[in-house]
Length: 353
Image (cartoon, rainbow, N blue to C red; front, top):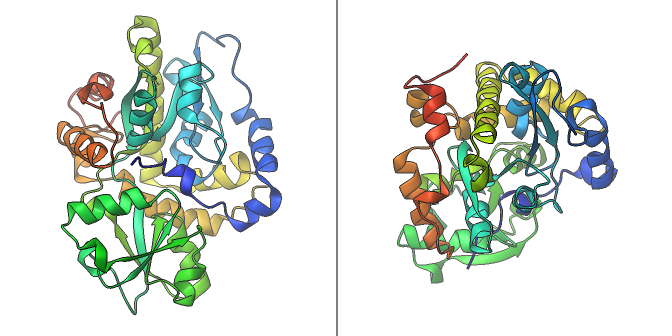
């Protein structure tokens, strides 16, 4: 069984649904920051296209800051940021040549390779995968063991992840009642389920708004579901071309500077998201500020504090490969990752710029 892409299982916000996906993507594509792929380099910079994995959200705030503040151009690249969506396959975009860099998750890259692609992960934005189990403060689920005897709402595509968590924590699957649900938090609010699989930095915000009080969120990454998320993948052949590899390194330098700015203060990233990249997308400063704060738990870890944002460690690779195997994705090995660019960029330091 294969773990479906995290981004592909996420619900669109109600306001975005009302506007329609086409409207959101059209606005994002129309703005100067997300227009079509450059035909040629500008001002001596190398044109690159970044395909994000989802619709414009502060989830990609560091990239927005990197473009707005000129971090990309300062490092020799002219980056076009393309918005994703439920019908956008970022890995297919890279494999087909429609994009130079694709954002996704370690499992989506590994699955693409299992299907014939030859992609490599060069950096990892979210050190912890964002899949979590949300519960109420009255019946909190704070460890996997608390899942036993409970009804757990499982959206389409998350059963494989639940099975992996059950196996990793030696739980009795017969004591956990899986209830098929959509992506809305209503089943948890109503008490239909005791726990709900969610995206860590999104549905908990919606639940608090609906229930009038915060829920309890358990990150599955803390309990054996070790899959890097929001990774940056390129064709392996790109890294075998010295000129292209230099351009990708320039991109990563700009990207890191953008995320360093975000971690220091996400205000600019939030404002760019709401007022520019997702203009007319129904987002609010308040909600995106909350999401930006929650994402810090995914971006910043002891590993990144010691080595820098977007870091990929040997230990992380080992854990990722073990999780991919538990999810039924075969054929992945250490060659799925290339840490040479990050090593060159940081030079033993924990920040750049």
